[in-house]
Length: 197
Image (cartoon, rainbow, N blue to C red; front, side, top):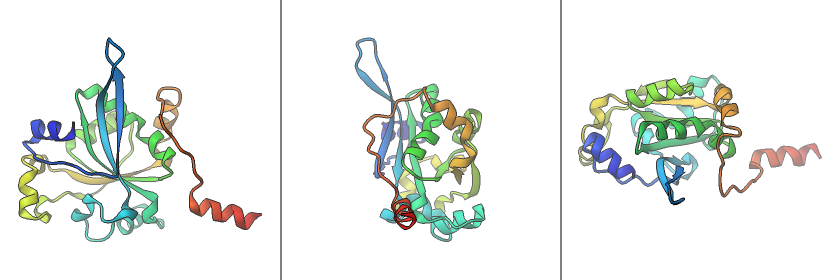
């Protein structure tokens, strides 16, 4: 879906490979599931994430400086490859982001977004903080060429913190169902509980 949407929107020839995709699914008249929107999720502790190509330092250092607090690399998700078959489906997926990120145990989400995507996020109530322009000239020439007209939209890198998404988080309760969830204690919390005992 992402490759198709990015080709239609920007003339891009990209095949994203995040650590996982989250999907917004609806059922058609026959009850068959249809993916209406998706977004890629990457874990920075698994290696460099795509948006770090635009940054002058690792993402955790940039977010620490902007947030005014220490941010560990394991506190961050990179959101990428947001695509939908229609705007309302994309808006539903975006509204579910805080709930998903809370379930994944990550207080920070960083992403690259076009002005149009940033406007949609603001419209649904996502609180984002801009970090820098996503300068396509920082990519290798062959990589830049594959992105077609994407960089003509003047994308920016930004981030959000879960504590600022309370309204969306609460609106998501009872509205969305997250399938196939495994629950684990975050390693740092496990250590704190062991010390308290």
